[in-house]
Image (cartoon, rainbow, N blue to C red; front, side, top):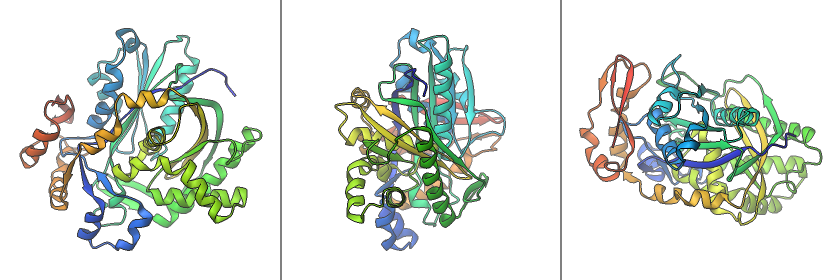
Length: 413
């Protein structure tokens, strides 16, 4: 393995400014309430109609950038944005982000797409670039940002969707997560489990996606063991963090992996899940699936809800439909909790405005104004002005103002 210390120096999540209650959504849609316990969702974040993938990304990253000294900001030599919610076939979201954050012009900039695996692809690419940089102070800004559409309305997929972004500062001072560079197992195969063939269409084969997820988890960990001699799913890692389409899926995946690799009894598996996995699920049950940022939202939850007064090694599993996957590891340092406590995610989650299902549906009717392919639009914020006044105004958040000949123009609240 590479011995250079590289990883996540700091991390921040933007969870949106509004949410809808998931049991209420089930009731309004006529969905079977007996499926709620497996979903393990309480609320899901909702984007304002004047928010998009760029605003989520910038609102997640700005606190990290603002906390840097001028010299540290100048040392950012890469900004990479992961998303499965792109805004253009050619122009990357990262160009907007780079400009709006005032990052230095001597900077690489690109966008990564591979469904929910994109955040990990971006992080691993950034870590390799920083490890190879001749400048010891070099940093990279990695952002995973996505936005839910309206195509899933009325389905069981709709209650699990989230909104927001996760931003990570990558450097050689990894105060949050020091990656075990080179300690990764991969698996990829072609499968049509979930896809977005058009901006207004989500195609979801839930059974196929579950099988692909489980297959990738098992094969990725087998590949990890081949590369890391003596690795054991129970004794090597103090905690496990998984990509979370919904929390119930993670519980099933953990059970399957331990049953196959360790032949553990069901009661022992349940105890292991409660101790090593459950702390990572809390925020997803309040925010929803952040797609390319899902794994890193789970990492935040783990750090906030488990004991890291001493450094602990964790295993992470990343999955993206289509499909690609990776099992990798790193050490959460004793400084991680302090880093996250500087900008408490739990407080941001609780500050969101609750929407009725009727308000949620009304907002959804206005989201076409910001969609992929829109040439010209001036966003009318009148229908949700009260939420802007109570939960956005004066907070220095980025909002989409208008689109002029495909160019997106933003403003600060």
